[in-house]
Length: 242
Ligand code: GLP
Image 1 (tube, rainbow, N blue to C red):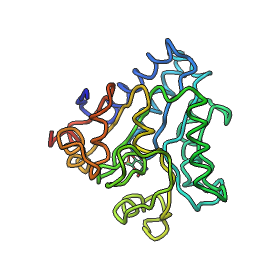
Image 2 (image 1 turned 45 degrees about the vertical axis):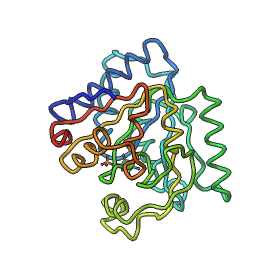
Image 3 (image 1 turned 60 degrees about the vertical axis):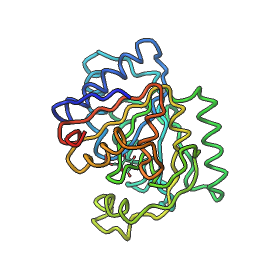
Image 4 (image 1 turned 135 degrees about the horizontal axis):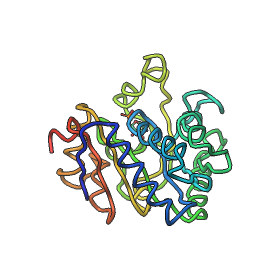
């Protein structure tokens, strides 16, 4: 695992955007695995700025969703599909045909998860998977205790994660959906390159456990220690306990 420490979140965003642009140089139709949350925003902003300045051709890029809430109506502004439309697809000038994601409104969620696994494989697999990290070490919505070999499936959120994400639901953890679909840890590990971005002091404990702790289901991000091409980009605050 390669660890790169950057001065701040914006510098991290620029660094990861540069890696994406390099990838697109030899693979213009790359499949990018995209995460939600506040951490990856500087990456999407830097990428959009580079494209606007003529420094990258994003016209053939495809994006694949990492995780999603279950139980929100289609088009709900806080569904991750809506968030990705606002924060990734629109700024990068991509249409819905560039998007791959699970159908979280399907009556049979387990079948929708299996279908998403098939769609990812049929698309050739993820070239670069961008990840944030939860304050409890989760990646995607793989909460502590998730099997390190898990595939895309339905999960129940912990109270801690519902509390962390309450800011998107008027500050009320009770309004955060209990159930989610997430790519499994085994699914995430199949991406050809995994980039985990961590910024801010409240990620310091989780990042230290992921990078320097034992490989353990209690810190799902520690599974990246198994990946042959994993990069961690952290600002000084998130890296303070390494
Ligand atoms: C959510 C998402 C994760 C994300 C995490 C951290 O739980 N499912 O994919 O990495 O939050 O979010 P943030 O970057 O806002 O701290």
